[in-house]
Length: 103
Length: 103
Figure (cartoon, one colour):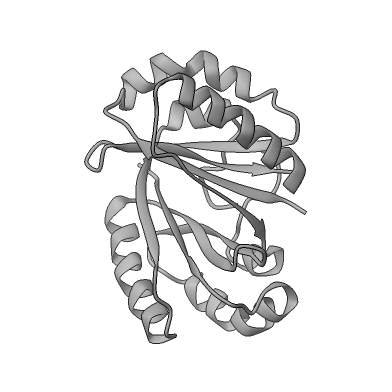
């Protein structure tokens, strides 16, 4: 069953194109994480927050990534991380055209 | 630019198949919301939370829906709603196979 991971945290940036430049290599590395179907990179300059929404193929792979990524973010000096793991209600999500597989 | 909306709240259910049955009509209604690309319905029986991750085609349509849906949830008696709106970093998201359009 696909598993959704939401992570967000306070940050002063980089945002936008500078964020892309700073994290392209990290995105390429994340792409090889076991069980990852996709990640949407999120950012909000106004509220000074950023993060990601991920779809993993299982609860176990999501939890394993969450532990690894939390350690990495903490290593970047980031605090105040909010992380939530959810099951996906597939029937309702399919009604709303949700993308539950790798593109 | 696509805009991501995260909503979650404490709930005692329904979860799983009962959630599907309770909210199928609502999902069909949400599918007609202006600007909606997709919604993933989220649920976590263990932490007693549920919600949704949505992709809208613009910040404006996401904000408009958020106001409407918050009123609806409040009408259901739901409190403690967490809602966050984010821009999507498209370049990084594309590296990670993110689905940024309607299926």
